[in-house]
Length: 207
Image (spheres, rainbow, N blue to C red):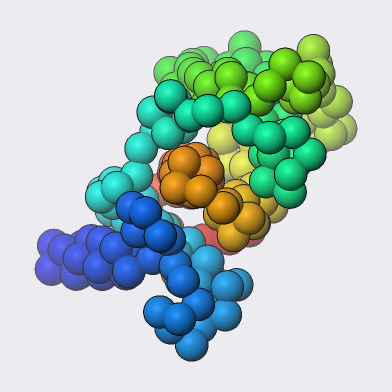
């Protein structure tokens, strides 16, 4: 109990050092590089997720995307977010397939709902002329295509790539709204990662 409490406190304290409501992490705040900042941020989020504690100032993706003015087409952030939307829609698709093969559909229903609502909310922040083109279906790797059942852990074996993707979005964010979206997406991916391997040390997460 004391270890859990310490981890929760550490996660919230470290997270609050990097999660700022208006200015984000400025280079003048620390001698850490940008990549070191995001590395510490991800670690703090993993600690919080492992202890099922949502850090302060983090919204869900739909909440973060609500009332955001349309992004400008062609910016580095909007281009990277386009890829993230497609990947999140892929989680929606694959969790639907996996749920159809599972006897325990509830975890898949939760995952599918979170991915679907997240992808849908993010699509709404794009102007019509550069709306992300989400595939109708996605190709499955052979080990998933022919499996009788798919585990959440199998689904998220590439979660480190997703964490890196959303970490880069956090670095590319130039406005408070963009940073809130990136942070919400990063928290969602980290939460999925932890749910795939409950009880595992947050310091060893990363596939």
